[in-house]
Image (cartoon, rainbow, N blue to C red; front, top):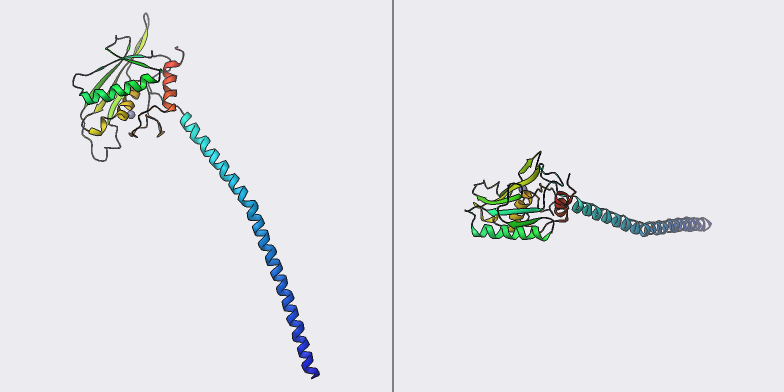
Length: 232
Ligand SMILES: [Zn+2]
């Protein structure tokens, strides 16, 4: 019996020790869990803050994108051109093309920065000739190649009676119905008055038609640079 009771007490002792250890493990496990949830609690606001900062940074980048001025055509010097242009259409320009160009003219006039009026203009005055052409493009080119042509031609006279004028042109490829659009007409007219291509999709001067029918802030800023900079 004595031997048995010794075994009994041994079992009790070992068992108690086991439970004690287990309790310890459980206690430290609970602590660990509390610690984790504490660190999660502190981590979440930190994450949120970081996200906010990232969002703010993105917004700032976007703002500076729109503030990024549309480039000028390479032959344009700021402050050398008068704001008034006389425009006319080639005889073969169909009515639907005239209509979109007239709408484009109205959009540019609405900025107040340039003034486009019907007429031929003298050699010393700025002129725009609207034209049409037909050019077949491969299927890959369609949608990747410009649906029109346009650009400034700078006339510069030095010496007595010196002047600088822009005898520009702006045309649409009537081979394709999709080129007779206000967005394309505005892009080509943009070239005529001195705007170059922009890599900003919000700009009218993005090389591929985005269907945009209003001047972006960056486009307007470029027009101001050309026509509102004090002459030299
Ligand atoms: Zn272009």
